[in-house]
Image (cartoon, rainbow, N blue to C red; front, side, top):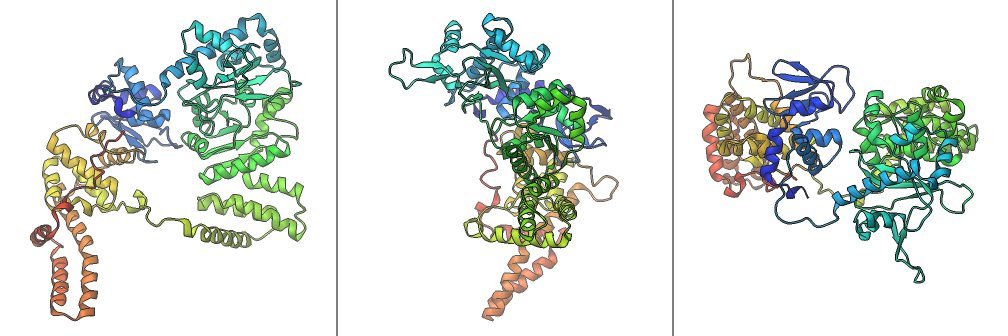
Length: 629
């Protein structure tokens, strides 16, 4: 879908949105010479390591590695895709988006957003002003939800009719098919029903569900009479806008408070979250009536690395808290669990005991394993052998989910103290469990998966990238690389792509950010690497060696790295066959490696080996020129 935005429009958007102005509109930047710095919004820190370079139009954090251009910043900060970031920046600059010919397949999301915004406002007007909603207003009074909160969360009321949404759509010239696509109406399977479509939400309090850009994407409708024999909550079905496993309720309001508090409160239901916000705990969010998923965790990790769970105090709430804690631990987050009395939830607890008491419960929240041990000890007699084994097995299963060794060690020590066991016993049991788990899926795992970029990126390749972008005479150093270093010898894909971009930038004479925008970079790693390389300290400054000399040394290193495996193979072959030709080939490679220690001696050797290489091996991988978006 990103491809529908014309390239010339993207260039205009980039030109009209100075990165310092854009970043500065989100949080305060402090000028340091020609650049700016601030506390990084993407990880917790006390000393500013987030830098913005207006000259190069990039940002980079020296703490967490985040970096890129103005599009990447908006994508990362707002947690949106490229197209949405481009639209936000275009709107900011007053640029109408110019689209290439051809309409993309799929739903009209713009129309769906407009529909949800309109019907949410309508439901809210009905709640606040319609006589038919009097009992809904009375219900809100019994729940102590004030008018400010009702307005802030745009709570509404769906009248007790079968065609309210349909009538609204007819008045606003919205096609019934769009209502059905949004999940606001349901198609009847009763042949005796007068109309094919009818309202999904009837006589319900309506809670709009928003995405992180504050756009209404779905609804949750609650019955007003608990005696009614139907589901207490009815939620929108999954639609092109709404996937419940990805959306956290109220994250659009809570994301900045979460970052400021350095912790998120996770509740089970919408009313719990609303109650927390009204009581001043504005860093509270909730799932959408489904198990906490990896997508939920990824959304939270953008703003914090610590979570406190506040679920219902009954058995189901306890079990859900343990499951959710495991999911959070698997992502390396710190997890605490607040224990509410049985029968209480955050809504009821705050209403009856007040915000201060709730704050105390948050302060007393225990670690995930301490909570789990407390819960299991009430269900099992940990004083018996079998009881202790059952508790220990369950707790180790939770601890085993964290990939962080420091966190794992800490949780083992805490669990050992609570269970009155030596930590080494738990460590040994956990190792046995992990080994058994690795053996089970081993046959199904593929060994063809390429290694992660961080595992293949060497300091020499990273240094080469830095020289290519820091040298005053970039043409000279890129010419060296283009002439003497086949790019397939660069093992890390992102370094290879960035070096290719530097070479092509010299040829085309275009801005590097414009060039990178056309390259395959779905996860933003190329943008991050480019920002890190451009903002790295100049390693040449103050030294006698030049950038060109440093690049020559690096080229020699990579040629030696390339020839060493061939030397080993030639030696083995010579020893196996005993043939004089094979021994001569081995001796020649050994001599070549000795000569590749200085540029004067090594440059002719490189030319010889370049002449021997197949022409097809001279360029970067086939993905180098692939579209980015």
